[in-house]
Length: 588
View: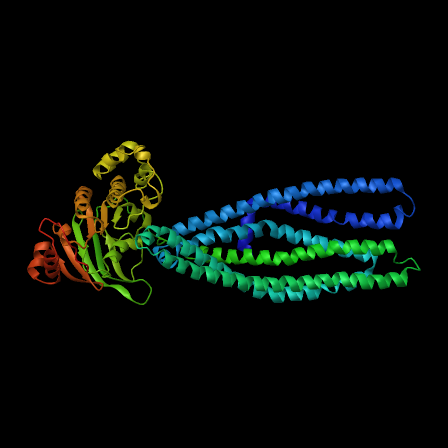
């Protein structure tokens, strides 16, 4: 793990070297004050060397000015380096998230991912900046302190340093407990973020059903879990700090007693003077301070290391990769074939069982059947969002594993019931279908989707911001905007996954006109609950429990008097006339 962490320092080697050099100088200059103090007490004051007293004060002032400038460099440039490392990690994480398969997002909540992108990386940044310099300054300060204190009185120095192993033993004993507590705390923070993201995203549903109290209860459960986890973390941290601080305080007691005894015994022969004793007392602070820095570093290391482990959990999640010999399919004709396809989502339950179907190029193929039967799964397998468990899928007689996923998806346009629009302008959302399109092409796409006239009524036209997830638009306007996005992409294969099921009848008729225009000349796979909308499809397959139970065109399926015929008659009885209007829609 450390090797991967240090890799992020590579682009900043020069700045890191300067930062560490400045830290070394700060640590080395710290020894000057006790040295001058000792000389003052033992020589300059006693022998009335006033010039040296003044010169020493001026020298000390200059040294402190240099230390101030060095500390400014360490704080400023060191933090700049830490932020640069954080930014690189964030870029790596985001770019990796873009490569992960659909299954990753099935299993991971957005809020938890966001927590790793923000909170965890902030802690890693602090460790990246302060870690090396704190270790270096503390190490050099402790070494300098030992050498200098030994030059004053070796035995008193050895007695003081004999306490160090006890301090380290306590620190490392409590380290594991604190680390475990902070890991639990981070998980609870991620849970709160996930709950908050879900509640805020669904605030309109919450208000519509007047369920604010339920959302508050759900949030408070996570908030309480966070509070308890944080309490345990602070308890472990409190034990760590109080115990280690007590051991550090023992140093002062030892210096006071042992130093006093040595001064009492050796004062008469001049081997250990009052000036030496005073300098030792002053210098012990120079030793205790870096020890305390190392102790505090433990907490910082726990946060940073835990954050980096969570960062690596995502970074080590395998990316969606093409086969080594995968090729670009180029521009497809649109012939699709499923051969004995079986698929399950990893929970030991297959969603599809031995699916065989052929969708000739340029034809419209419809899937109908009860919810959960596997219709949407079939739609997701064609763009290679998931890998089949068994069987093969072909596009233009080429098995999709031999093709790059990017080239497959470039040729497929998808319009779903749940439309996702970005918090951007009308123009930018349409342009997402093909980023290099011209303004004329954008307008043409909008006209073909029957959204252009509405856009022109807006104060800022195509530059009008639509809000988060298109909140400022109606359902039909969102759908038409998504259709315009597909128009500008101009794919050869089109997938309509219940694209109109959430719309009212009048809006559906308008959208259906746009969809009919969109389907012309393309291989189209349609998933629909309203059978009247797909009665003109070239082929219709009835999917139930992951299997194709019937297949044929509308008239053939009615003639079979099977499942499709019963579904059609039931919808007709519930208020649908032969023109496709519904007063009530059957829920499968």
